[in-house]
Amino acid sequence: MPVPYASAQVLGDGRITFRFCAPQARQVIVTSSDAGAAIPMSFAPNGPKGLELTREPNGLWSGTTAIPLAPGAYRYSFRVDGIKVADPLSDRWSETRNGIESVVHVDGPSGTFQQWDAATPHGAVTSVTYWSKSLNAQRRMHVYTPPGYMRGTGRYPVLYLVHGAGDSDDSWTSVGQAHVILDRLIASGRARPMIVVMPAGHTPDRPGVPMTANHDFGRDLVEDVIPYVDREYRTIAQADARAMAGLSMGGSHTLREGLTRPDTFHWIGVFSMGLGIGMGLNVDQAQVDAYARDHAAALTQAARSMHLVYYAMGREDFLYASAAPTRRVLDTFHIAHTYHESDGGHTWLNWRDYLADFAPRLFRGKGVSGR
Image 1: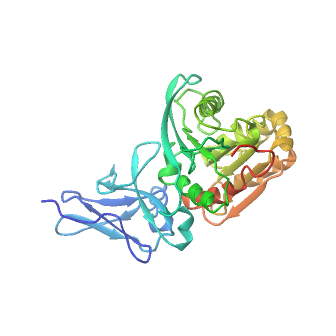
Image 2: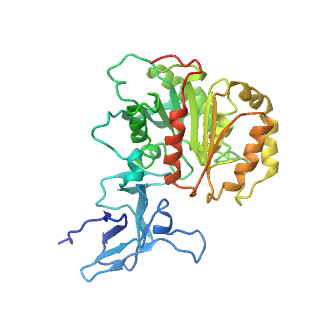
C-alpha cells in the first residue's frame, strides 16, 4: 500500500515541507529555479544542487526549507537518483522550455497583488494554436481577455508579453500570474482593460539563429501573430494601442523586435535584460555598438513615437552589468525611459513586480481610443 502523505506543504511561517514517496530510491532532492536561498541551486561543479530530503523508515522522503519563502508562485521538481520528476501529487503545473514542473503558492500580505481572489472579476486565458506562414510551423500562444470581454462589443488595446529562455508561452500565467495581476489591477481601476497576448518566444532551431537575437521570432510576431490577433479579437489595431514587453530572453526580443518597430508599438517594457550579453555573460561593447548602428533610423524614430519605454533590473541580477550600456544607447538616441532598479535578481519574484508596475502605465491618454 502506498504511504499516504501531503506533498508540498506550506507552513504558517512561509517555509515549505516537501515529501516524496520512493522506497527504493537512494537520493531525492528538491530543485527550483525560483526559490533562491530557500532551495539553493548552483551551476558550479561543487555548488548546491537543491534541498536534499531525508528518507524515513516507511520509504517516504521529506525535508523543510530552512528559511521562509516570500509570497509568490514557485516552480519545483524532484530529482530521484538523478532523474527529474514532477510532483505526482501536485495539481498545479508549469510548462518550461523542456518539460513540466509543479507549482506551489505561498500566500502573504505582500503578495496580495498576485493572489487569486474570488471577489475580483476574472478574465479568461485561452491557449491558441495557429499556423505560422513565416516559420512554416504550427505554433501556440496564450491570450488573456479581460473581465467583460466575452459579453461586450468594445475594442481593446493589446500587450504582447514574452517569456524567458527557460520558459514557454504558458509561463506568464502558470507561474507569472499575469492574468491574476491584470484582474486585480483592472478591478481596482489602476490599469486599463487590455488583451494580453503571450506568444512562444522560442522558434524552430535553425543554423545561425541565436536564441536572444532572434529575428525569426520577430517575423512570426509581425507577420503572423499580430495579424491573427487583430483578425480574431476585438483589438484597437494601431501602434498607439499596442505594447510589447518581455523578461530576460523576452526582454531581448523586445529590444530587437519591439523598440526597433516604432510603427508597430508605442509602449515598451524590458525586464532583466540588456544589450551585448555574450556566452560568458560579460558585456560585449561591439555588440552594443552594432545594435545602435544597425537600428539607428528606427531608434531615432522611436525617440519621437514611443509613449513609454520602461526598463527594470534587479541589483543582484547576473545581467545587471548590461543595464548601463543599454541605457546609454537609449540616451544617445534621446529615447526617454523610466528606469526601475529593484532588489533581488533574475527571478519571478521581480518579474511579477515589474509587470504590476508596468501595466498601469499603459494606454493612458496618448490618443488611445476604444473601450
